Amino acid sequence: MTSVLFVCLGNICRSPAAHGNFLKLLADAGLNSQVRVDSAGTGDWHIGAPPDERMTAAAAERGIDLNPLRARQVTPGDFDDFEHVFAMDARNLEDMQALAVGRANQPRLYLDLVFPGQRREVPDPYFGGAQGFEEVLDLVEAANQALLRQILG
Image (cartoon, rainbow, N blue to C red; front, side, top):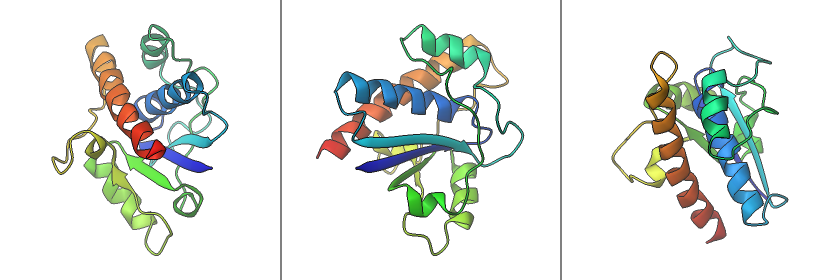
């Protein structure tokens, strides 16, 4: 079994979108029992909260259920527990690298899966309009397809 952790700032928009979409891809492929998936935030503002209502609604339009997810904060132990750890942007990557010193698995920038070496980021839609949530979901779907191909070898 492999494991994947998606991390953003508050764990209410981008990382839950990646988490929920990847669970759906795994279920559609009949692989949900072979990959452990979770999401977290580098910040502690939303611990225990559900994903943002706007992201939940946008994801539901695509058949992705975010309702069971709850925010949590990333811990140093996550870098031992998860084989693949992805940061949604450079700021969170830097914060995670500080936590991951000496740990088994190091965080990577998520969109490097589809844009290798370009250091592209998943934009935070929190303070924007509906189009921002759609853009995040488009990026997440592309990156997760690439991740699934990578995991399957």
